[in-house]
Structure formats: C-alpha cells, structure tokens
Image 1 (cartoon, rainbow, N blue to C red):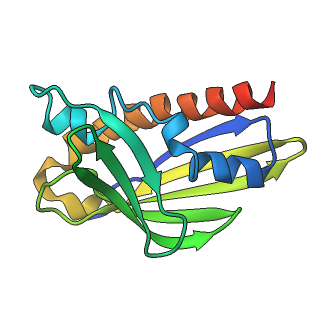
Image 2: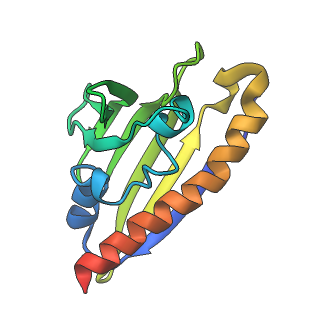
Amino acid sequence: MSIESILRSVTVRCDPERAFRLFTEEMGSWWPVRTHARAVTEFEDEDLKVERVEFQTFEGGSVLEHMSNGETLPWGEVVAWDPPRSFVLAWKPHPRPTPPTEVEVRFTAQGQHTIVELEHRAWERLGEDVEEIRAGYSEGWIVTLERFRARADELAA
C-alpha cells in the first residue's frame, strides 16, 4: 500500500544558507510549540511548557523538545544531512509503538529568495490510524511553515 506524501512549500526572503540555519539551528524561534509539541498533546492536563527546541545539526542527531519539568522528548532523528540543500528526518514526535515517518526539507535558491519544500512521506508505516494522523499533519504543516516564513521575513526586514 502506498499513501501519497504531503507536499508543502514556502518562499522566504533570504538565501538558502540562511533559510537552512533558521529552519534547523533556530527552530525554537519559530516552531509553534503552543500548539504543535508533545507537551501539548501528551501532557495537556499538566502545567508544562516547552522550554526550547533543539535540532542537532548532524546525521544521527536528534530533534528534541526540552520541557519545563526537565524532561527531554524526542521528535525525530536526522537520517540525511546535506546543508544548505536538504535534510531528512525519521519523524516520530509521539510515544506510539509505530515506526517513524520521513520528513525531507529542501532549500532551493530563486533569485534573492529561497523556496523551502517539505515532503512528509512513508505514511504506509503507520497502519490503521494513518488517515487521521496524516490529516492532522496535512493541516499542521501549513501552520508550521507559515510561522517559519513569517520569522524569515521578520529577520529579512
């Protein structure tokens, strides 16, 4: 069974090197942690918040959510690293016993701008809950990439 990838893109007013650094090293400055974080989905009844998001910028590194109670929760692992062109994550920001999906982000220069393309794939790994989970990401990536675009534009101003 093959399930169509989610494809999303934004254009930002900076070169690929700057866009790549903003997406990775500075992820915590734009990621919508109030709505798209494990602290929200897994600990909604507790008084916890995300202190910071860490993106370890090397193959084999992790994307980590550091919470106010001192816990660190993984979101994914860097499985391919090609700065400033692209990276691929084994994406699993949850504790469910399913394999990770894959998120690839590509950065392509277009004049004074950069096209940032996100592909979220390998949905067939998730089993029976795939449609509900995929639908959430289909909308969530729009919100998330808009926050990224807004932060890039803010820094370019």
